[in-house]
Image (cartoon, rainbow, N blue to C red):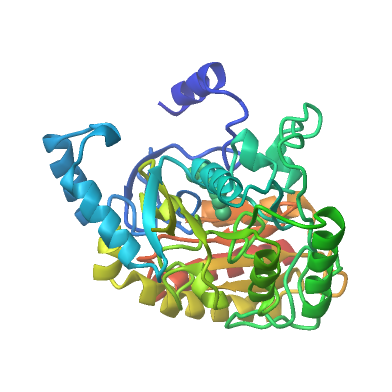
Length: 422
Ligand code: PMP
């Protein structure tokens, strides 16, 4: 069956849909934080279908609710009323502070962000959208213009003008973390930034102001940012940066959009929404991934539920407890191994940056990172990748993961690092 699937894939699935690992996994089943391949081998899933399966694979409550709904009614679109949609809208918006009380459901995060930008432009009658370097907001032609991670543009963004023509200005802020970020672990020696050019908070905000003043003289439509950059590898901003940025944008008549596609639904542990960790209230919030736990669901919440499983299973608290535990355990590895340059993040949104050495902080060559990563897989632990040079391991497991799982994962990672050092 493996060879047959490989053949079908080669012949009938577009090659741009890349798979992980030299020998891609053929998965047959999942249960909570575990995945099983075609030979019945079990893997601890530390990436949750790219931060999507938040409450766990085939969570029994979600499975039951879905089966019940499938037997009752599938689709009516929005021309009729259906109770579950209304109850859902009420529940979901109850989780937001005022005035974020109206929801529009979409199918993906990209669509949600497309809509958010559209709303900002319509509402403000301005045009420019500001985003941050290292951010990722989707794969649609429109949202692709917001990403500065070129590998996601497949060489088309500039060549065909498909994104640049639509987005007159994109703020390209500095890469990387900061000394004063809000994380249970602090960096050693110096802070992490991909290009060795980490700016202190004041410089960061100054750069932001410069861009607003020079590229966008008077007005902006909106500012979109993730509370913590996901695809870029759990990259955090200097403390209070978002707060000041929101103020500057609002002074220029713009709306503030929080992309909670990865950070929402309690993943960062201390708060249900990522924006709350920054002490701000956005004008528009976009949601996807965890909102559907794998089903194509997304939403835009703005001025005028899901979390049933998240609430009942105490998953936000688990994110905080187990996430902090994992960060501290990983920090021990960072202190032990020169090639572990940084361990950062919050809750169950963790980045582990691999470097040649802690002083230069240059990314470890990708073949070496691949070796460690493949080794972890062979020992039963699946990890995500991210960052400009794919140098950051992304750990964002189903939020039902336990401390015992963390011990297992850290031990596996430790073994893989040790093998690499030999
Ligand atoms: N925003 C962020 C922060 C994301 O990480 C992603 C997906 N990786 C998106 C938006 C796009 O979501 P989707 O893939 O559902 O279109």
